[in-house]
Amino acid sequence: MKTYKRLFEQICSIENLELAFKKARKHKTLKPYVMQFEKNLAENLQMLHVELIQKIYLPLPLNEFILRDPKTRRISVSDFRDRVVHHAICNILEPIFEKYFIYDSYANRKGKGNLKAIQRFDYFKRKVSCNGRQIRGLQDKNYVQGYALKADIKHYFETVSHEKLMKIISEKIADKDVMDLIRKILNNYNAKQEGKGMPLGNLTSQFFANIYLNELDQFIKHRLKAKYYLRYVDDFLIVHNSKNQLESWKTEISSFLQNELLLELHPQKSKIIPLGRGVDLLGFKCFYHFRILRKRNIRKMQRRLEMFKQLCKEDRSNTLDLLESMQGWNAYAKHANTFKIRRTITNKSIEIIKVQPPSLHH
Image (tube, rainbow, N blue to C red):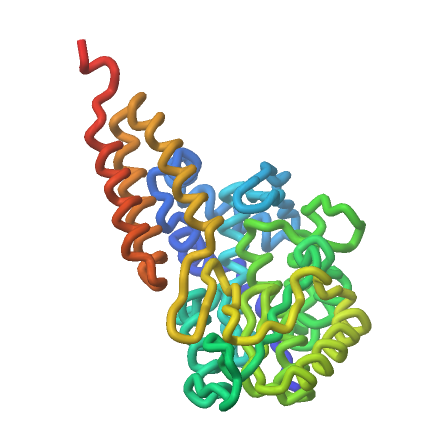
């Protein structure tokens, strides 16, 4: 197997750091911390370059906060200068690992994404069910031939083994300085268990997640030979016309995760579902002939509108953020059968935008 050497100097080069800065500031050009860094850009990049080359670079403590929508999650955000370093690493390492990833891995990759994953699932269910064919004699009008094993990994980001991850990376990267830099980034996270865990919110965490679970992808595709398989971060799905085959694969996958990757399948979220009942996938419930938004997704947008209603009363400039949020949500929601709910949400947004702040009523 080919290994790659002398990558550290490429990561640390001023040219790569400049490109990394441009990627790190994308969609954040007006953030104060970005403007502050850009004010002395050449000096800041030179300082990073020197710290990296001299191997004295240390990431700053993570800024942590709790998100409770749709579920409680601890998000850890790196300082902007560290995000530049993360992009610098990914700029060089991503093209190396990308060629080893399977086609049907959809998270954090160019040309992929959640909507591509859902379209791929549509293709899988058509193939397995012979274009939605029903079995004669069954009274259930919703019956569609075929099943989906829908699963995810229990506390994935909290339980990734640093040693296992480093071993997987070292099979391709034979550069001690690069490995030492990766270890510094991994050790910067204060996990519940020593030697485990990656912070939600880091670019490197997303990239390393794909490297780690590529081992699972290879096992399912090449050892189990599951034809209709896809993964999005730690959510994965296999479609097949035999429930027994999926039960057997589920047992083998659980064993592989425990023995090889030191991970566990989530017991409540790993189920075999008849395709006719609809499969929850990336915020949608996907039936054979249509898909709908999950209720919690709609509730989340309704809560966001209530928040913007108050913000726009206090400051009219928040209407721009409301419009941006609405545009993103509509682009997402239109991929389901959501005409009525999108019309309702749009009308509520228009009402909010029309409301004048209290100071203008006098």
